[in-house]
Image (cartoon, rainbow, N blue to C red):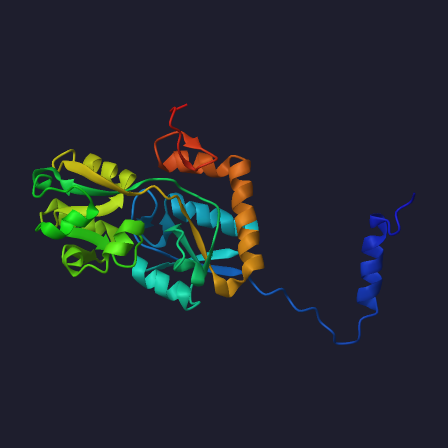
Length: 276
């Protein structure tokens, strides 16, 4: 059966329609697509470049997401807490590297996982015996000073303990991730809530001069991209589909391996347990 409307006739039809348009009529250009996100230095996820937009695993992921979606991604440097507040108010559109939670689902949609790295509590090795740390709540009975990023989610046990004043007394909000590592290095902090990769990089960067002791695994939930609800469910689903395609064609696992030195499992976007 012949096509009801052969595609080869389409150029001629379009030319006819344009010729018949009313005098003075002009086509309206499509509105430019711009997606705004937050960042601050946190290797290997975010690295500053003088006079240029940031690079790093999450920066390059978002840049490719924009290219494949026909959008420009704009980066605004700000700390995590401010970024979450800006997303909630609809003033930025995306935050990469977020753990999904019921509270955040009130103002954001979540993509599929983009990185699976455990969140941990690490202490300076000489402070690891400062108290009997049987669980996270036992921090309340110590004099340890633990750095946190304000507004970060370190797992359900951590969130529940925020109602305990003695536990909160042990916490020290930090301006940015690098600030936390600097305070740990000079002894102004005893420990940090962080991810395993950042802790390993710190030890490598300091050539082992400040040895760390992992104490607890806080969460093994994978991180995702938060998409502001002001963009709408359809737009969020479209962005998620682009990320799925980036995983399926191997681009995203290869990007992760370029920044994170372990073979990546596409199904989890974490390090492959078998190392192969």
